[in-house]
Image (tube, rainbow, N blue to C red):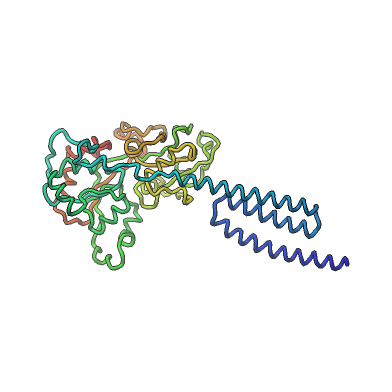
Length: 398
């Protein structure tokens, strides 16, 4: 009798070892694809289940106690996962999209437009072959102002029936349209070196590459803008070093108490690949690796980045980045711009060059055949054009 019980227990242990191994293997695979709280609950449940089977084999504790412990652990894991699902669903439901930015307010020829203007008519007046303009959302106010100043109103209105004279498809799409010849000039930060080297592979299919084999981007700096990092208005951190910002976005610093804040984990939002602000982050990191973000920490729209950080209830521990004019003038928010290396991101500090994160932005062409495109760029670099850059809220290049 004792021998048969021993054999049964031995066989049970072998079965448990094999079953437990495959259970943990499957759980590890599942855990790699689910959020961290779910993975932790899955591991706890697996270990509890293994201990439950061991207790049954060796007769540890009474059956009711074993069942009670297994039931409590199962219920707790289900509760944690359920709460996490609810929180994520709520966060998704409050995401604010680009509709919060009304670019129509900068329509160049509408009454009451926010597009800046000069005190007198511009010396350049384009009445035909109007260059088609596109670019980054952050710079739409300035290139809308160029249209207001240098394009003939009637010619602009008539051209709208034929093609998009002025549009904003955002940085990545604008580069693609420029490369395909669908627009003449775009206004944006320069893309990363990788994008420049592989532009044809990124933007063109195999049949198009031969046709555009000689096409290259041409960059003309026309203004400067501050790259800014921001936190929720109630975050206690006001100033941060460039090195610490790099350590946050490389994943080395993970808690606000490491940079003088409260004991809260840092939720570092990022933009989508090849967006203007993500390109600026890559340049800022200066070769340091950027941590791979969770999918829910990537904002495809810049207004979304500002909005989530502004929301204290759900994102009080977050940090994001954008450009000075966009973050302070184009969207409503409750974010606080961080001083970097002891210097506040004010327009004055951008103009005098003391703020450390200042980047040129460009008028970019790619073999356009429009005869007025270069004339427009030359005028932008003139005293009138540079004055319009300043009146639009940016910093002139000259």
